[in-house]
Image (cartoon, rainbow, N blue to C red; front, top):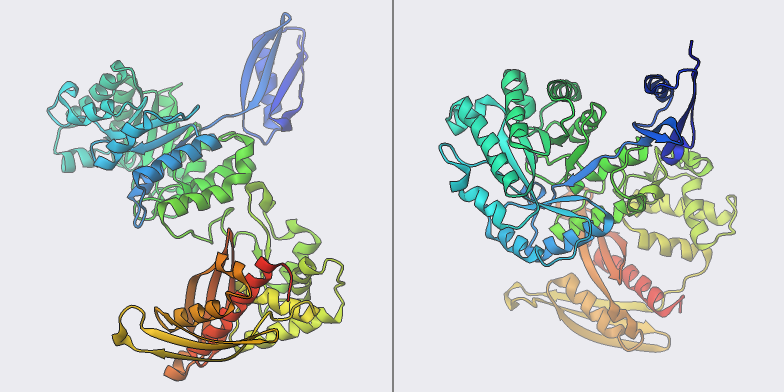
Length: 585
Ligand SMILES: [Zn+2]
């Protein structure tokens, strides 16, 4: 006779204990009780056994996954991605501070930059982070002791070495042109050699999922060879990125069945747009090491995107990959990685993109302002992002009111100035203005309607000449501005007409607003709005101005590109003066 009583306490905090009272206080009874309780829990848990004060206890804890960041190696193989040695050092320091446990930092031997990096990395103080050197097995017919590839991996000084080997016999016969047995030897002996040299060895089973489709027994033999060599983790790779989640699940389950207790990892590429989904499926099936790259950098369509995968696993599924404090830094971290790689940041990225929580349609905005859960799957702040209310011709009163409240917190939704702003924005957007790209001009428009903005200066007149034969400074602009009682008339050269106009305006204003020099024009975009009218078409100009860490966009629309540019430049300067001089003048 036995009666078990079982409860899960404090489960949402990450740790819970299963209390058991039974006539037979056997571990088996406790275990079955725990499993039953876990069925009712949505969080992924691992079971901990403990004997305390003579009583058997079993605990549940949020399962820990190991994050293996391959941005510096696989990510750097992406088009347009570049890291110098100095960038790599900055990167590693940043990830160490965030708490990333494994960083695959390069392929010593494949390029001199990576060797230089590992030489420099030896002196870095990195706390808990482990740097992995990446490479392949030794070559056909070669003993590991003779292998230049393996020698360079050891010479790198990295404590962790990750090597890949073929797990798809098509590659063995058609690319390596070796026997299947020889390929198994390369894997087994290379891993064993590195283990004997005292390294932690991770084995990447390249093309595992494709290999398994065509020759499942051989794909498993490749994993077996790595375990015989002593690899600490076998990473199953969807190298061509063409698998579906159900194929990943079946593959992981097959390996788990063949090698119970073996630590498994997932390395998924994104060629089918499923890099993240496939990684999630692998974790669900029991993999504990998760590989990927920030922003999904990587060859072709990239790798599993850690900027998406980490919040999925940690925030939505309750696994632990990074310290809790890291999550609110995800947005800035992802941007940092793009900056460092000199790559354009994808603003449409889930979780961390600027558009991820941007609401535009009037009805959606109205709903979000009443209850944000209506159109947001998570609170943007949990990943360090922010909610944005976009202003456009689709905007309803709620969008405009929300924006105006930033400047006038007490303003009521039915204040006539809200209506006035809405009508003015719709009128301008009809002419080709697009305020969602021009937050600076929108701010000025709203401040004007609130009656809180007087232009600090007025541009009375301007002329611009261009002569392409003059060389680099091919344009001259003359401007006449009025500041208070004074008029200034000044000419300036520039690289192109817009640059000349910007230079002349800044020159004319320098004596009145010296702090203006701290701001600069950082981007200039022109778009033709009505292509059918040829050179008569309306153009939209958006310029971006930077002041310290803040940037803002301002806009101008005209059939005359210079006039549109001047409008956008003026708004940019007005705001720069407002920010640096404090308030309006
Ligand atoms: Zn890869």
